[in-house]
Length: 155
Length: 155
DNA sequence: AAAGATTGAAGCATCAATCTTA
DNA sequence: TAAGATTGATGCTTCAATCTTT
Image (cartoon, rainbow over all chains, first blue to last red; front, side, top):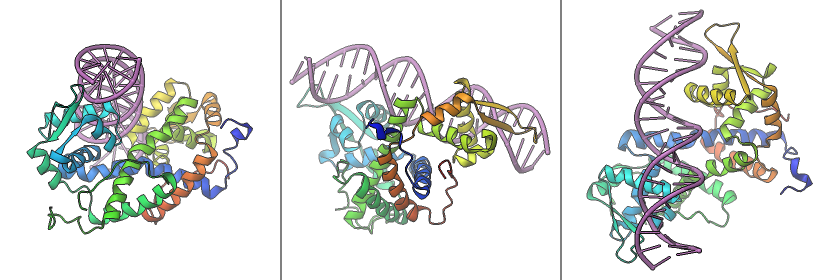
């Protein structure tokens, strides 16, 4: 990557540069924009909703922390902090994993289940838009589909 | 299960839903991924680079804080904090605006100018990728091109 | 009162360090 | 030693409050 062509991030035409600047804007603004509605309507951040949604799909609505981290593309510390907060709010509960004393299981509570069902993450139009966008992005960014999150709630 | 379900963001086919989940992943991961390289190579976050880059294009490399906020799609408090930090690092300096005693001007220092030039924000491949992605996104998300950031450094 | 800008508090993410069990 | 998970510190963003000038 540092071969002598190195400095030449420069041989790009103006529309392309303008494009990446605009993308930078999107990346700055979109996550926050998506959080606003959920936050207002359900008191959840997007990532919190995602955690609850993944649990809601799991058998017994229960998942190991490590597995939950994988499904939400999260690091362990991040998930640990988030689940802690969700637990304080009574939406999730944690208990030692019977199979492996190192592991911890996270389980959706009744309140958590209710919360997920109430909280529609996005409006239909938003979902349609974003689904289309997603295809466009991921076709280029993740052609091998390594992004691991999956969702079958409405299958 | 919740078929007739409440707010009915529901009339969507499975690929669309899968799509938005994948997009959620991208939105979670992409900003961080873009920051890594800049952080390592230049000790700058993406947004900090953006601030410096916008200043580097401005006449006298100087901009009012309010104008700089507009060009970086930032809020006032956010910009204020960021510029404070950049000022502490000697990359930017602030001084009262001569024309309007309420306003503050931010100006790139010599060190700041060097920093911007050294710090290639992205590799050529990344820029190409992102430029393409940007078009895909913005065509749907921002058809009227209201995203205000602009960039002419390589015109 | 509105515009321009700053400040401090609160919340979330990231990173390194730590602890326990396999 | 490695895997699973948690904790605490640090840093950035957000929000409300504040201050000055128009």
